[in-house]
Length: 328
Image 1 (cartoon, rainbow, N blue to C red):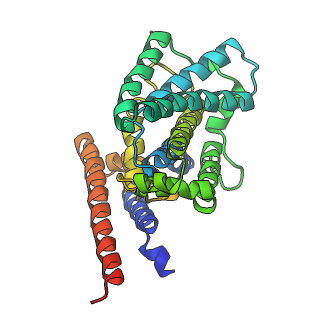
Image 2 (cartoon, rainbow, N blue to C red):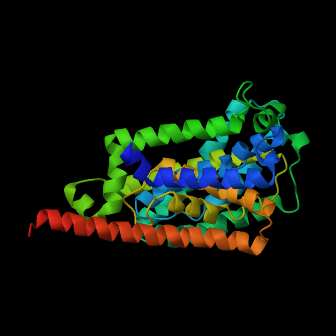
């Protein structure tokens, strides 16, 4: 119980709970209404899926800045697929979207592995390249809800009958649980942490660092592709600017959730809670009467605070480890 209370995840959940309670005191409909309850869960779902994929990359001591562009390009591709094949199954749509995202992730990972250049540099370039492809392909074209499969749209609006939790949120939670189990309980999952903690030592030990790095970008791309499908289901209207700005929110959610930007530590559950907190802040601050400028300032302060906290905790753990190894 003490370990749970002291964890980063518990602190983020506590901040989320305090924010929700404070906002409900101003406007009870924030939660205690059908739309408020639904929006509380459905709003962070897309960002949550992106943050899971981003966490894989950051744990390996890299960053993927192209996830927003992959989301937008995948969403538009899914829209065009539905427009040309109206009877296509939603299950096939999900498979195609994840495959498209994984392909772009493979491009990112292949470039990082081949060029031996930091992922932030490579994905900064592919972020603009993928967005450019989307803009050229889409042009002024806009996919409307009437062109999408009704089954896909139903996933974006319907909820579980009793608990009234949206299906999009259920999908995001399933992905979260699968990713958390994999990173915690499998040898290959633990290798991501080893590579992020000490890449040179991991390579000398015999770990396949390039393969793991490639896999992390494929997972990030696949999550971005899945987020693109969820975006299409959630909003129905898709244009060339879909997903703009999501990349920084995904990185911010992961970092705030305790995934150290220096690699080697953190959990996808923390990243998911970071996404939940950020999405709730964006909805709550206008109700609390805080202007748009300060909303962005709060996001920046949270990211800076998380980075400083990670640095302080890392130094403290290093001193404690050194003291235990070298008794006085």
